[in-house]
Length: 261
Length: 307
Image (cartoon, rainbow over all chains, first blue to last red):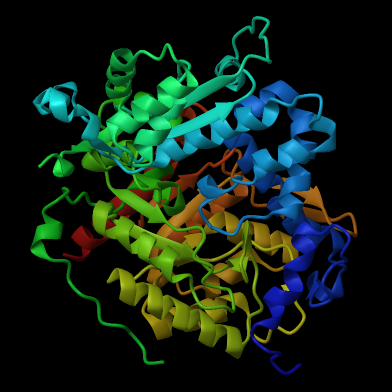
């Protein structure tokens, strides 16, 4: 009988090889009656790597459909080994994956892939975000017209905006299902609004100026400043339609009249 | 540390939030969202549903709608997968707080976790990893279970693992280790019969000997699942706890033996990948339920004869 080693040593010895295939089998483990444990330990290596690749595939189904399964899994394997999860909540995993895709050599011919991934990541954040009742259309009616410019809003916990110099929103929408895909001009810049107005996550393409408008509002700036930011970016920005759309999409949960005194 | 922790009784306000559904003598299935419509179309199925706690640790959204819907009409078993109770480092307090919040919110009929670890330092490995069985690891595991039970205010069921390796410096057998944990912490046990069969095959011991040595009186839930076959370095059979198919005949046989000795306990069909249509899962649970009912009738018959 050997003495108890430090209680922490087994995890320290067992862990490194789980995501580093270059390491051998830890010498603290064995099969029964001294049998070898190479393939046995490899079961754990395989469980860890495959389950984490599966987790990324579940978060990024459109990216996987675009690249094909083999390409995706090879790319994901690199990322899993480089950046394993630091939370036991797998729906929090993969936040660095879009940035990884951007630098992944074999994905350079698909410059829009990272932004497509960013929309998928935002989709999952919206899916798990806290429940909150979106601001009703009638709430805005109580604001006196001369105070309109000073109103500020509280964003819904699910609200996300992803801006892209590519047609990431169209590419995302076309690849989330398994239907046929028309030709997409990937070079068209698109801004996506991700919200959860009722029970389901929705993704809308914002009109020119829309992302500047909602970006200003979600960062707490008043309506007047947000409208100015939108018009600066897109002089033809339709403020009335922008407000109607944001209410319908459930971007906000409350408006603040405090500064109206 | 001292033996059984004292558990606080949930306040009346909490107890009134959701109806209490009895899980006694029932068979259940893993709850998969893709089955929700079929489950409701089925009417109100008897039995219980088990969920992995971590899937419901998001702040809100559709997962909670689904769990609320299933919890209203059925008993729910909350099965934690990531607490890393078997790890050497302190428990993740934030994770434990999330686990407690789920226990408070959904008032599950059963609460369970694993004799395993999944996090080392800051890395989460997403697998149930094995630990050596020594006095030092026993002390640590007991401290962790004490902590979990004190925070959530009720005892947990601890699940026996399936393993592929042993540790050279283990000084205790698994059943002795588990028996000591149950005695010191007051926790109940989740006996995974498939895990017993998988480990027995992988390590060359007798599943029947293991079960004879297992503290069956403490078992509050049973797991049944499918496994897959591979080979070890010597080309001999190595079973993988894959949860991706029907329960094997040998596991059904062991289950029948356990229920014969222990009497009916809530029994779950675990199926986590290659998930079949709802009727297939339901049929596996019905097969378990038939065995539970047969032994319940036998015990009732024994009692009426005695009277």
